[in-house]
Image (cartoon, rainbow, N blue to C red; front, side, top):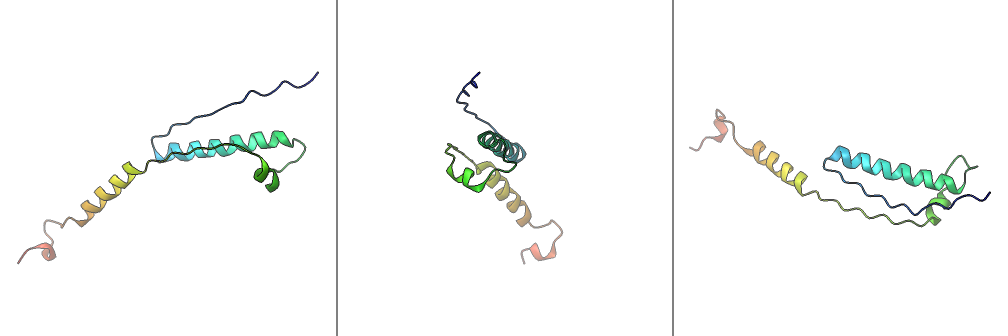
Length: 91
């Protein structure tokens, strides 16, 4: 009996935190590896040539705006003088 063809899967992930983003990226890597291992099931390792020659499409969109805003806000807090700091008094 001939093997059944594999349907063309497409995946999409959404992350709203750095940890979720890292988890999604790991999932993508594992999914790619699983499919590449299917190309050579008797080979215990995925060869570099297989990685180079196997076509796929990956699109990544990354918005670092919220983290940049948090960095800027933290820097502003760090730059504010302490209330009892003698160096910060205007004289």
